[in-house]
Image (cartoon, rainbow, N blue to C red; front, top):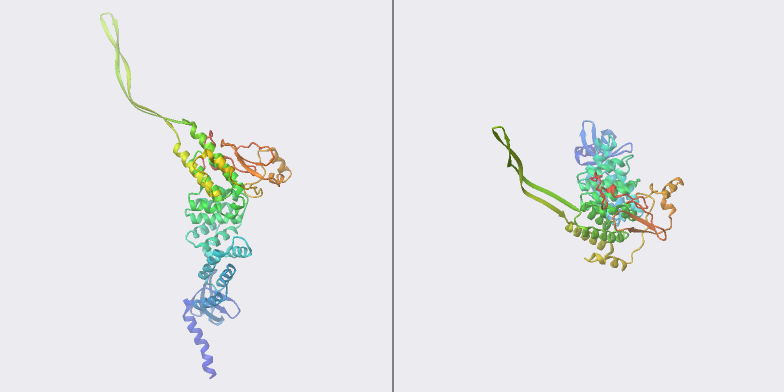
Amino acid sequence: MAQPRFLAVPVLLAVTLGASLAAQEVRLTDGRVLYGTTTKIADGLRITTQDGPVVVDATEIARVRTKSALRAELKRLAAGRQQSAFAQLELARHARRLGLTTDMWRHLDACLETCREDGATRRRLDRFLGSLEHEVLPPKERDGSTAKKVRNLVRRSGLAKRSKQHAIAHVLANLDGANADIRKQARRAGSPQCRMTALRALDIRNEPGNAKFLFRTAILDSSRDVRAQVARLPLAQAYAADGVQYLAPGLHARDNKIATRTAEAFANLGNVSAVPILVNASRAVRKASGSGGSTRGYMAVINQQAYIRDFDVEVAQAAFIADPKIDVLQSGVVLDVTVHAVNTVRYRLKSFRGALERLTGSDPGKVTTEWNSWMASLSLPAEQPRGKQGPTGPKASTAKGRAARAAGKSDSDSDAGKVWVGRHDGSGTAVVGTPVGTTPMPTSGQSPSGGINTGSLGVSSPGQPALPGMGRR
């Protein structure tokens, strides 16, 4: 009876090797375990793994398990666990160990649905997503320059599901020296989904200047969904009060699109420090609408016809000479037009009103002259800029900023403990943050947290020409 049992081992191995395309796990006699698509060759198996093909001899194979057997094992594990975010993450880890990539993404999607933005599980999830470079990028695209690698990763996020998009964002965030290339893709990528993946990577990297970039994207991106999502990223929310001061000059831009998108960005940020800025900006808009006649245009459609107006007769000896006098007859239309931007003003005020309603949950009403009294009836908490990252830092244009840099600290450190209240002078020339109980410091479109002037957004205050190059920067 021992002989048939001895013959059963090679027969079973031959049958397993024959079902080559269905095999997923190959366990070798030296303890190694390989996952991938297998192909039978003359003296063994060729296993195509994520890192490339591996050829093993038939005598080195201890056991081969098919994909269905591996999924059955994963299903047994999932049956005894709760449907919590931590459980889904552990199932995704196990699915990756078994080489079940499709099941791994499915459990990661479930984990993202239930996982909070903070907490230990979210940190474990972020670390795991950052380790999935081999799952999101094929071997032939892993080599090359950083710019090429960034471009390939962003491109692959275009049609990916949510978990794979987040994984690509974390892989991008782990690349060394890739911040500038990621910014380029956040502006140039054709798909809104690709741009959003690049923006998530910038949010995770949290390098100096990335907060400003996110705030500018909340205005400049062509997609409404991207503008709304970027304002809800953790970095943008952490510095929302600074972002309001940074973007406030955009409310007075000559370009109506910039002004309305700035109000939309305030509503997306959800920071109540934008309420007094919006109310004061409406007063400046009304003042500009009442001036009228600031823009004039001329057009002339004229037909000119030469004709002989008269003759001058000159008399000489035995001769009379008629000298003709030529003149020009002009006929046509001359138009003198004065432009009154009434519809534009109404459109801006409508966007301001919508932003105020989203920020406070209360409609200020159609009559803009009553917005000040409406704001006075609200209980708005005072917001304090973070003063550490993004649009913060010493002010180069003030003596206080130069002294702070010389002492090795920022302006925000010297003003620690003071409550900052956003204020706008109503003319569109400056937005300042003033510590309570101090004298306002005159600026030129720059916030005390290092905000930008209107030229940084490609917009201008009333009476100033718009700067070129706003575009997609």
